[in-house]
Length: 262
Ligand SMILES: Nc1ncnc2c1ncn2[C@@H]1O[C@H](COP(=O)(O)OP(=O)(O)O)[C@@H](O)[C@H]1O
Ligand SMILES: Cc1ncsc1CCOP(=O)(O)O
Ligand SMILES: [Mg+2]
Image: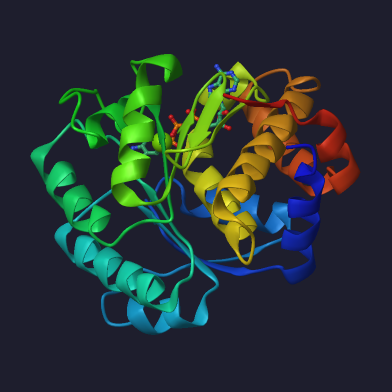
C-alpha cells in the first residue's frame, strides 16, 4: 500500500461526522484529535437519543472504557443503526479481559458485527477468548502474540481487526499489514488509543475499510513520531501531537508511512 495519503485527502475533503460513545477519560482528547485531523466529532451517549444521532452520523465509535449498564444499552442501539445502514462502526474493547461485565457487553456488541475492532494486544487476545486476564487499559502482551487471535477474530466477525502497539498489525482475516510508524511516548498520554478509533472511523467513511484502517494507523503513528521529535515530555507531546495531526499533508503521509504486507 503506497497511497496512504489519498485516504487522508479524501477524509479531509468530506470532514465526516463521527459519533463517539467513548469513556470519560477520552472524550475531550478524542474530540480534539478528530478536529485536528479534519473530521467532525460528537460525543453522544444518552439511550434516548443515540439511535437518532447515529442515523445522522457517517461513522460510529464505541469504547467500553468507563462502562455502565445504561451506556451498554446505548452502545448496542447505536451500533445496530450503523449495522443496518451499512455504515462503519469501530469497537474498542478497553480492558475487556479484566471483568465479566466487560466480556458480556463485548459479546453482545460483537453480534452487531463491528466494521473494525481496534485494541491493544491484551485486549484482542481476551476478546478472541484466548486469554482471560489483563489488568485494564494497558497491554501486557506483545503484538506478535496477538496476531493469530486477530486473524481468527476478523474471520469470525467478517470485519477488520487492528492490534496497536510498537508495530501495528491490521487484518481482515485474509490480507494483513504491519505499520511501523509510532513512538513510545504515545503510551505516556492517556486516551491516545481511544482517540485513534475516531480517526479510523473517519478514514473508513466511503473507503475500503482494511486499507483505510492501515492508512489511519500510519497517519497517527507518523504524527506521534513527529511530535516526539520536539516534545520534552508527555505534556508537550500531547499538544505537539495535535499540531502534527493538523499539519501532516497527504504527501507527507505517503512519504512517511511505514506499511508492509504481513
Ligand atoms: N511502543 C510503541 N512504539 C511506537 N508506537 C506505539 C507504541 N505503543 C503504542 N504505539 C502507538 O500508539 C497508538 C495507541 O496504541 P496503544 O498504546 O496500543 O493503544 P491503547 O492506548 O489502547 O493501549 C497507536 O498508534 C500505536 O501504534
Ligand atoms: C485510563 C482509563 N481508564 C478507563 S478508560 C481509560 C482510558 C484508556 O485510554 P487508552 O486505552 O487510549 O490509553
Ligand atoms: Mg485502549
